Structures are given as structure tokens and as C-alpha cells.
Image (cartoon, rainbow, N blue to C red; front, side):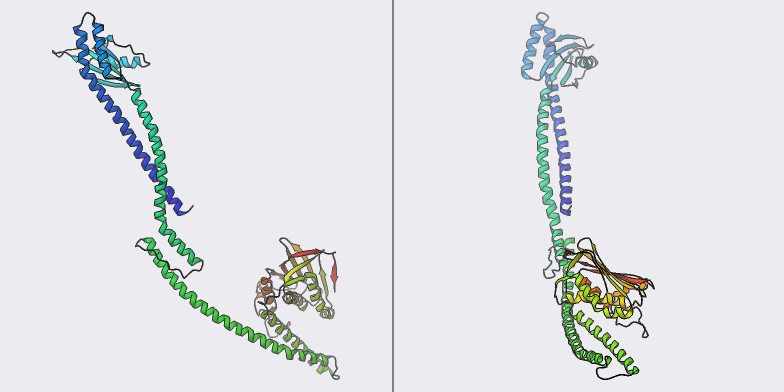
Length: 488
């Protein structure tokens, strides 16, 4: 939930509660005032007319009922709420009743009359919907023998109050709607400046350092905006300097790459001729050699081949960003790599097995880079294995990925060095008297090329127990093929 919505609900809730409390208090005050005002008026009315009734009762001994009924009719015409009038003695005995009102609360009314008929003050009580007013009659000698009991029906007043209660509920529903509007306006006003600050921060997050951040005022949001504007200027200056530095580095890198590519090609050209003449000498096509000369030629040939391999690796690295993507069949690229090592395998007396499942997988890659990956991994397996076998197996994984495992029975790698083998210029034996040659960029190149292909590589090995190199590469499709086992 956004900050604006939280404020909206808080403001709306506060306004609704305030209006509800105010409305309820006002309604109760109005209700109490209405009832008290009515009771006060009816009390005054009763006191004004009470003496006439008693005087009529006392002065007319004959036809008393006729005269008192007539007087009460006149009084009732003045006050429609009046339902009954009683004349009682101070002991509570009723000596006259006008309409003999029937109610379920007759007993409670009688108890109130008996209790208060003797008092010299006007007594009032509301029993259910009836207002009972007892007005004492005191003669000119201050004697009190009789009281008038006026009974008024207040159900009409209560109905009127209930009708206004319905209006009050409708009014409160309208107040809730108005409170929602007011809450929305207040939340919008409160969060508008905050949202501007958030918007400015998001623009900076997205890399827009050109748009000015301006928020007028002296509140906290304005202070934050000024801080962001200072940060924007600082970051913009830093980015501009960084872009200049990157551009210079890019230009230097291009020059370096061009130089490295040119020098590699320049070295490759004469080296090819050198290798050719060394082959002539080894094969004694230019004349017979003695044993010491043959040994020297072999050393020259080995070092020349190493130098040629190094230059080839450098050229491959230079081609890293040159896209020559094509569809390549995994089986044929592995077969080509295995075939290139046939002579070395025969010379060392090793067994090389390439075991596939029934599918041939089509990869999307550059042929030279894919060839270099397997050439480096399989070449290392052959280089570091003096006896036993090299086994290449292919298995399918989920999500259209294929696993190529190269297993050997060679010298192995310490567990603490397996992760370091993918770093540039790292070798298993870095001493000058090391047994195995190389410059330490083979596996680094393999890792770089596999990263470009969304592939992965890891090494599992133990000293004198052999090594297992696991490569995982995505494929685009597979073709059904009979299961085969190719041994060289």
C-alpha cells in the first residue's frame, strides 16, 4: 500500500470519527432538549389549568361530572397530547377520572401517584411513553387535600425523534462520503511534494542526471530535494568524467587489440615457414642428421609448436567480440577434435572413448571458439595423463541443455586449486622446472568462451586420482540418432 493510500485512510478515518462523535453528541443534545422543553411546557400547562379543575369539582356538588368534563374538554382542545386527568386525594385515592386510560403501566402510574400526591410541589415522571404530572391543590388557608394528575402521551414526540434519527443516519452516510473526498484531498496535498521527490530519485536511479530537481519551499521535502539536486550535479560530473575515461580506455583497448592482432599475424606468418622447415629437417628431407642433431630438432619443434599454440590462443581471444554465430553439430565438432589428437594418443598408448546417447545436438556458436573449448579441455586431459584413458560422454539435461564430461586418469589437481585454474596465467606447476608446458591461458579462454554461450564449466579432481571436467551448454534442437560408441 502506497504512502498516499495510508494517509488517505488515516485522514478519512479521523474525519469520520470526528463527525460521528460530533453528530451523536449533537443528536443526543437535541433529543434531550426536545424532551425537556416538551416536559417543561406540559408542566407549566398542567399548573396553569389545575386550579380550574379542582375549583369546578368543589363548587358544583350537583351535576359535578358534567361541569368538570366540560372544563376538561376545553383544556384538552388546547393540548392534544393530554390523554387523561385524575383528581386524587393526598392519600392517593382517585375520586375522579376523565377517560379511564388503559395502559400496561397502570400499576407503575398508581404507585407514583400514591407516593407523590401528598407533596406540596409539582411531581413529574416519564413512564414508558406517558408523562405523569401531579399538581397539588392548596387552598387559601394553605391546606392541601387534593391533587390533579395530568397524563400526556409522548409517543408522537418519540416518533418524531425516531424520524429525525433516520435523517441523522442518512446525514452521517453523506458525511462519510464527504470525509472520503476530504481525506483524498488532504492525502494528495500531503504526498504531492513527497511524490515529486520520489519521482526525482527514480529518475536518478534510471540514469537521468540531466533533469533539474526543484521543489520550492522550506519544509523537509524541499531540503531533501536540494540534497538530491546537489547529488545529481556531483554524479553527473562524475559520470561525465567516467565516460571520458571509458572512451579513452576503449580507444587504448582498440589500439592494443589492433597491435596484438597485427603482431600475432606477423608472428604467425614466419612461424608457419619455420614449422615447415623443421618438419623437413625431422624427416631428413634436407639430409641425414646425427643423434644430437635429432634431439635438438625435436626440442626446437616442441617449443615452436607451443609458441604456435600460444599465438593461436591470442588470435582467438582477439576474435572474442566478432560474432560469427552458426549452427554446429556437437557430434562432428567432438569427432574433429578427437581426430586431431590421434597421433599423440597412439604415441602415449592411451585409450580415448567418445560415448554419446541417441541424439545429436545442434548448438548455436562460433565454430573456432567451440573447437578451441574442446581442444583445450581434451588436450589438457591428454597432456596430464601418462597411462589409462580419456573418456568423453554426452548426456542431456533439463531446459534444453547438454552436458559434456571429459574424464581422465591423469595426475589430478588439488581441490584447493580447481577454482583458480580458470584465472589468466595460472598453471598447476608454476616453477621454471615444471614438467608440463603452457602459459596458463587455455582454461581462462575456455571459461570466457563458455560465458559468451551462456554455458558453464567446473572441475572435479583429486591428486593421482584423475580429473573430471564438466561442461554444460544450451542447445537449440536435437536430432534422433542411433546410439553409438566411438573409440579412437
